[in-house]
Length: 234
Image (cartoon, rainbow, N blue to C red; front, side):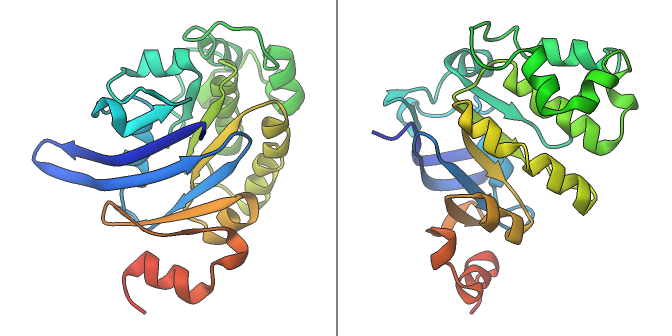
């Protein structure tokens, strides 16, 4: 049984339909990447899984149970945490306070504590009393990831974590992901950098205009197939 899956997932913003019957599957221990151009529906897919957008009960299954109608706090309590695009740190809180916020929705024992997050990203311990938004973009992204990990999630949703960051910083952040997986989290990441997505994922889904247009393991996806699925042209 899949750890998480969507079945015929649709999503709307008022009269605008953003997703059309999206089916994805995440198995235990996997990392899957969602790629696609701006406006393809990638963030909407994560928001739907995270409970930010309500759906039909059976449109999202977690451990085989329908969770599509649950609100975001209930989804977090079940063990699904999201690293949102743009980080969304609290400017009035210190780095450590931003991290501690992450455990309020799901106070369970697990691998991730302040100590283990600081071991994963040592610079955060050095900056722990600084305002969260006073850090560099890369360090803020580490705080956002650490905040999500503090809930000891079984599924970690990552939305454009490399956006706007220098390549050397992106490399440092992605270097932490094997340790995140070893600690028990399966990962769904939205990533516009196709090369990075292929490098770190077990499977890839490509989206265009709210639909899945291609899926497969990275070794099977040619440049031509990805280009056609990404832009809708051969």
